[in-house]
Length: 233
Image 1 (cartoon, helix red, strand yellow):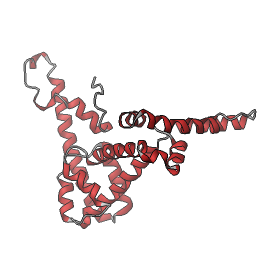
Image 2 (cartoon, helix red, strand yellow; image 1 turned 180 degrees about the vertical axis):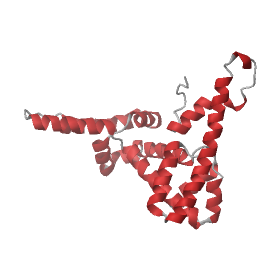
Image 3 (cartoon, rainbow, N blue to C red; image 1 turned 45 degrees about the vertical axis):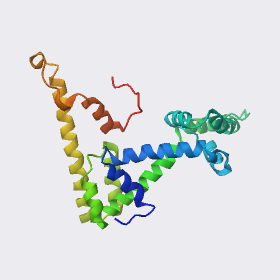
Image 4 (cartoon, rainbow, N blue to C red; image 1 turned 90 degrees about the vertical axis):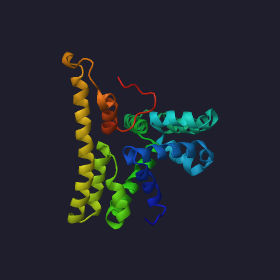
């Protein structure tokens, strides 16, 4: 496969064959953006303006705290908090203006600079994946060897393919992605069923086989990777 700036990230995560490739790509991108923001970029006016206006979700605030220094995070917060003061709490007796500011605050509370950039990068990676599947035979083999796609990314892949491919190509791609995901899903469901059956008194002392971590694997398939240390209860 001829590598380009667009294909390298896709090729790298597909070569790993360790879970859903797009989930792995997201984790790498999240770390990269957190390092970028808390590094020298924190002093770049264009970056600071963008982060002021969008903010960060709680997961990525946590990641930034782990990766960046306390001073780096404080500098980012200093101007972001001032932006909120200026745009969501400006002195006004006009009910319409007060409600508008409150709505702006609600939007800020739900937006995230890292989420938006990662989502855009993953979108482009999916577009590259769909195109490579039909243009590069070596990549197609790599695609077909993936262990699974999580539920969200499987759905996004199909949606992406539908906007790019003609009907015949779309059906081939969709069938391939579906076969990979459904095979894994059936095995996963079987493991969960076996796990449940082991709590029947008639199976006391039996072999759990591959079912011991079936709950955790199901959560990853349904929701994506969880942060290290998250409860599995």
